[in-house]
Amino acid sequence: MTSPREIRTEPDKRRTLDELASMVPDGAVVAVGGGLSSREPMALLRALLRRGATGLTVVGSAHGIDVDLLCAGGALARSAESYVGFEQDFGLAPNYRRALESGAVEAADSCCYTLVQQLRAAIQGLPFMPIRSVRGTSFMTLHPEYRLMTCPFTGEELLLVPALEPDVALIHAQYGDEKGNLVIQGPPVADLLFARASKLVLATVEKIVTTQDLQGMPGAVLPYFYVAAICEAPMGAHPTACYPFYGYDRPHTALYHAAARAGAESFKSNYLDVFVHGAASHDAYLARIGGEATRARLASWANGDDAWMNLYRDEAPA
Image (cartoon, rainbow, N blue to C red; front, top):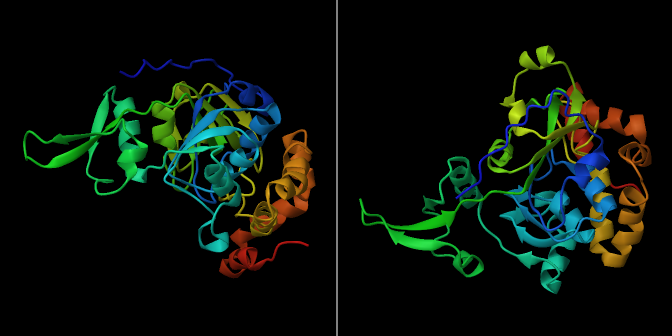
């Protein structure tokens, strides 16, 4: 059975990025929020790598640069994702692929709806949930904990998946307050489920505002009592998007992907040593990627469709 949730009522939960990173124990099962090229908690993941986190299991649905970076940084032992890649823009995730092929990271692939049902089971205090998906696939060989059953009402064969209770959920939202209330604008992906199912929720936000200001904002709301700690990290999802603040940074992602394709040593010297270990703080990272000029370029998506599309026509810098 899942464990009772601790109610988080501290009046001021503001912490530094490094303090948040220190709250993620080695070997933890970590739910990473956002998805693909949007609203992933990249500043916090870089802080985890600087801390030297190891042995993590990552769970999620469709992800990209976040999980790929954790693989390259040596933080992961197991990946239970439904997809990790750079979609049609850049294709496969090179660091992730190398890690799985070498055996450095164990592959425990699943599918999106399986994850949803496992989280729902944890939220409802149930030991499992039934699903119809993944039957007829080889997922059962990766997950011997799954069970088949015959429905007592219909006679239909169903698959039972166990409750998933991550140790930590890492979430990046647009807005929050010092109490830990969050507003997520745009698709929340699995973040609300992650927060309700996980034992510990750590959040970064673009901007910390007053509770009164937060109450008037549109978006999905995560109440304060789920969140253990919060940190204001402007551009904390970079190079993924966090609308309405900024779009996805295609040139930076192209630079990342080129370094990753060139091999592990190339990636270490040309990316990790520059943008992770070579930038001792989030402020140092922002300066390294171009500071205010980059922020303004990525915010230009709001100037209209042509400006938005121009962000994705850019080529990687030499």
